[in-house]
Image (cartoon, rainbow, N blue to C red):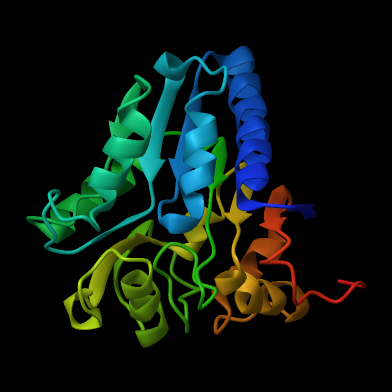
Length: 245
């Protein structure tokens, strides 16, 4: 694991996007294409602003994303499909985009997502960390044991509070209680993981992630077992870290 601390969220986004571009371009150079896994959310805004400007041949990049609320229309402000169309696909033309579908037949959607994600390894995963230290929507206590690729999950109170505070919903009661999420196991299959975690609101989660042993009550601790993890922080999200950490 390599931890990089930048002064601001904007600098973090630029640095992480530059790193991501290097990984993607190296994959394209080696095998002619790249497979990319993207997280969404307010903490990823600066990364997306920077990565769409990067020197990447997007026509050779196949893109996946992590999760989606169940039974949420694409027109809803909180839809992750809407998020990716507005912040990625409006600026670049990718080889193929695989959305996690939260509408319709969920079992069928899981089967389709699983088939696509497992056709070949994911070269790079951009994995955020939530205020409750979740990765994707794997809230505590996260399932570290399943070998499935996607599963229906229940969202805990702190996760739902974060979604409300970030402005995606008018009231906390409007935040869904269930979602379709990539599993911890599948996330950990990425060849390289870059995690962008800015803002003071993530400081406790970062402190717990780096200072606790691996445990499913702090799901992001599992990332420390990955052999190619790069954690990008800003001074606010790193504020509670001890110098020795």
